[in-house]
Every structure is written in C-alpha cells, then in structure tokens.
Amino acid sequence: MSEISVRVLGDEDWQVYRKLRLAALEESPDAFVATREQEKGLDEHRWRERVGRSRRLVAERDGAMLGVVSVGQDESRAEIAELFGLWVTPEARGTGVAWKLVEASAEQALADGRSHLSYWVGTDNGRAVAFASSFGFRPSSRRRPMRVAGEEDGADEMAMVLPLGVDPGSVPSTRF
Image (cartoon, rainbow, N blue to C red; front, side):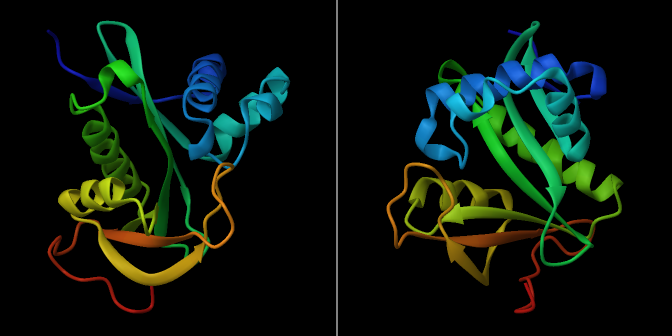
C-alpha cells in the first residue's frame, strides 16, 4: 500500500472540494453546520469562492480521495489559524488519514505565518478531544455553543490550541 499524500487545493480544484464536501455532509450530517441540501445547489462561482476563502487540503492514496480539512482565519486573533471541516471517508478511518491532514494543516498554518492553530471540539466528544490532545492541542478557556446541525441546545465546544514553531509542549495562555 502506498503512502498517504496531502495537497492544498487550488481554485481549479473546486470540483474536488465540492465532491468531498458533499460526501462529508451526506455521510456525517450531524457533524457540520450546513446540510447537503443547502450546499448541493451552489453554482461553480460559489464553490470557487469557497475554495479561495480558506486553505482546503485533501488526503489521497493511489488517486483515491480519503479526506478533507480546511484551514482558515481564527475569529479571535490574526496570528491564529483555525482548523475546521475535518472529515475522513469511513473506509479510511483509523488508518492515519486524519493525523496526516492535521499535520499538513499545522505545516500550512506555520507557512502562512501563523503562530498557533485552533480546533473547536465538542466538550462531550471524548474521542475528538483525545485525538486533538494526542496531536498536541491543549484546551483553552474559549467556549461557545455547539454549531453543528445535529446538536441539541445546550451542548458546548471548546477551542483547543496547538502552538506552531514554538515550544510544542507549552500550554496556551488564557488569552486564547
């Protein structure tokens, strides 16, 4: 079996992003803010706009698309990038694809001049918290109501933060 590769999508790859995004929304409808129904009717212009708004990274092996993640601007501070929209095809879960996507996201954020990478995780999603922690993300004091389609009122998510290019073992300040 060959290696997993990750690449950043360009404007011309809007159809690749569209295909992966719609697959993610169909397979995991409760994991995202939007629904497949809301996004399937978007035209080419809107998909190109979305690809250009954030970095979109795709994981592949032997020409098969295995997952996708986005890296954009964190709403709190300019030097922080935000990882969002992480999704791996069911058949590729547990094979290191998510790890490769997060690793490439951290490298991209660092290359873009960011000092930290944030990742919003449901406070009651032990698996996601454990995954992010194993990568080096640390909980911050930032909380917000859960913003995914399938969550009931009252659920929260927290920003977990990964220092980039600095002491990876450092704990983020309370300013995050």
